[in-house]
Image 1 (spheres, rainbow, N blue to C red):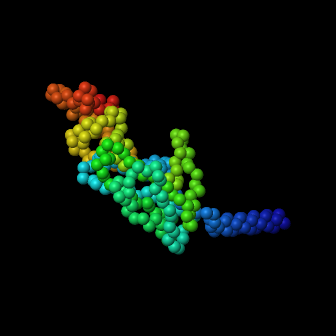
Image 2: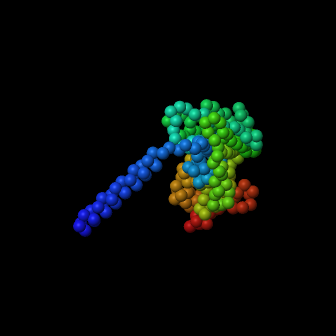
Image 3: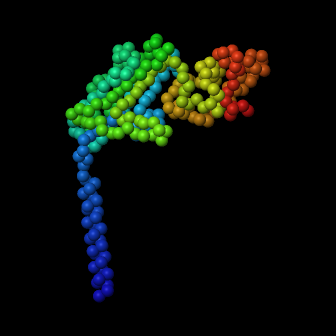
Length: 260
């Protein structure tokens, strides 16, 4: 009798588990039915760091580059569609870059292709003479249309700043700025003279220092650059040819970690 009761309990338990599994499967088959958002996915899958809503284009690391194609990922929420879906991009009035001068759209048919959830906003940034003295900005704003809404809230970052899902800023300059891969502990204080001298002496491709931090050059390599450059500076001093910074007063030195 106990055996029969025990078996009955096991059968009931198995039946309950099957009902629960069937319920879970039904829930998994439910599709997203709310409004579909369009957003710059760099807020989640960033170009240069978590919560990135901006990017800087610098022409200073190469002499022969005249144009730079920038692809900004745009994503739709929800399910894929069997037809192309257009989305709306506006250039904010606060932008200082001028279309046809500083930039052109690589293509202006902004759409999420059929069967996909991702597209890229493609812009060609031009190298112009005025970028030698000032940076220009290009601010894109996603706007709602018949296919998408822009309802995602700004992302609050741990540093107190916010990252936008509906707005993206591009900056363009031809003024040399400290690269993200410049590590002061080994390379010391950044200066244009030191950077270009290091490129010449060590025969480095300057594009190694382009892009996100240490994306084109390893940290260990940067360490070796600092040590090798300090040895060169020491040799020049011993030979009576001390190398100074642009002000001709401060001796050029690499970082603390390169003083070996």
